[in-house]
Every structure is written in structure tokens, then in C-alpha cells.
Amino acid sequence: MSASLVIGASGGIGGALARALAARGPLTALSRRDDGLDVTDEASVARLLGALDGPYDLVICATGALGTPEKALRALEPDAFLDQMRVNALGPLLVLKHALRLMPRDRVARFGALSARVGSIGDNRLGGWYSYRAAKAALNQGLRSAAVEVARTHPQAVIAALHPGTVDTGFTAGFAADKHDPDRAAADLLRVLDGLGPAQSGCFRDWRGDEIAW
Ligand SMILES: NC(=O)c1ccc[n+]([C@@H]2O[C@H](COP(=O)([O-])OP(=O)(O)OC[C@H]3O[C@@H](n4cnc5c(N)ncnc54)[C@H](OP(=O)(O)O)[C@@H]3O)[C@@H](O)[C@H]2O)c1
Image (cartoon, rainbow, N blue to C red):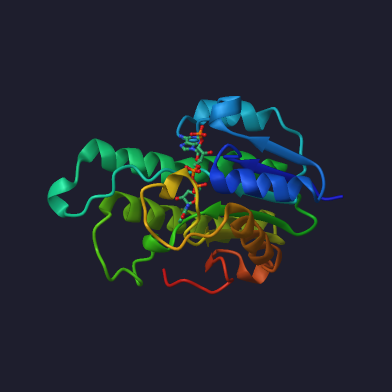
């Protein structure tokens, strides 16, 4: 039976992913709130993931934070920008760095990280949100580089940047928008991830499975 690992299981989407995956088979669910796993602190990532044996056929990093999105360049603030880079770009890449040894080399193993459509440079028509957009774009580039590298040691690995849609969680509490229920979002994300094979590793997809422009 295939085992799964969810990082960020205390979140709206991470929690829904954990519920869905627990119904499939063995699940390890970790979070900062419940386990002290801070993705911006490599020592904590190394300690918590280093305590696991795996193997995990599916690893999902569902962590992230929005901060205070800037409406204009004059609102850009260095510490806030760097905080976004730490939590949204560096964090999931540190998780991948330390989760890789837990992923099998002899069969398909999938790693998905929650990115966001607004991290797309090609799709950026509204501007603003400097820090969050830049951090998700940096995450996407890191995942793409990792997909190229990891294919050498894990030829059947799939690494994907995923946009969950607009989902009703604490993250979107201040937004008036048409929001998906987290359980539906989790089902959509798992369907997309399950449908990806090694040939698609390094992709950026939305909850429908459609490619998003880099
Ligand atoms: N909701 C949406 O509409 C939407 C749209 C596009 C993209 N996304 C992306 O989807 C992901 C999850 O969003 P969500 O809606 O589920 O948000 P959420 O409910 O606010 O959950 C955020 C999760 O990230 C964790 N987290 C934040 N900073 C962390 C850190 N330094 N170390 C470890 N964990 C940390 C939180 O842990 P604690 O409980 O410990 O704080 C929580 O588990 C994010 O990457 C977000 O950018 C969401």
C-alpha cells in the first residue's frame, strides 16, 4: 500500500489533503503548529524529516503564507519581501531537499508543492503583490531545477508546482471571491498529481490539470 507524507497539515488545504490521503493508506502528517516543523528553519526540517523512514510514494508540501500583498511598488518593504522568499520559496525547497531520501527510486514517486497562479510571469496582467508573486515564481524555478536534477537519481520521480484554485481557508479569509471548498480542492489536486508521470516532471499545473505559463 502506498504511503503519503503531507507537510503543512494544519492548513486549510493541507488538512483536507491529509484527510483524503488518510483514506488511501498510511499517512504521515506534519505541521509547524502541531510538530514544530518550520520550513524556514532548515534544522527543524532536517530533524523532523530525518526521523522518518519512508518510503513515501507521495509527498505534498502545502505550506505557505500570503503576508500583506503590496498594491504598489511604494509598499515594497525589504524584510517583508525576504520573509515571503523564506516561507514560500525556500521552505518547500528545503522540504524537497530533505524528503528526497524518503522517495523510492524504483517506482513512480510524486512530490507536489502548492504554488499559485499569481507566481506566473507570463500570466501577470494585474501587477502588484510583488513579494508573494516573486516568491512563488522563485519556488517554481527551484522545483523545475530540482526536477531536472532528481530525474538523474530518481528516473520515475514527478515534481510539480500546483495551483489549488481559490480555496476557502484562513489564507483567503479577507477575499470576496468564489472559493472552492478545501475538500474539493484536495480531491482536485490529488487527481492532477496522480495523473502526472515522469515525462511531466517539472511542470506547473492548476487544479484542473491545465498547464500554467511560467
Ligand atoms: N487558499 C487559496 O486560495 C490559495 C490560492 C493559491 C495558492 N495557495 C497556496 O496554498 C498553500 C496553502 O494555503 P492554505 O489556503 O491552505 O493556507 P492556510 O490555511 O493559511 O495554511 C497555511 C499552512 O502553511 C503553514 N505554514 C506557514 N508558514 C509556515 C512555516 N514557516 N513553516 C511551516 N509551516 C508553515 C501553516 O502552518 P501553521 O498552522 O503552523 O501556521 C499552515 O499549515 C499556500 O502555499 C498558498 O500560497 C492557496
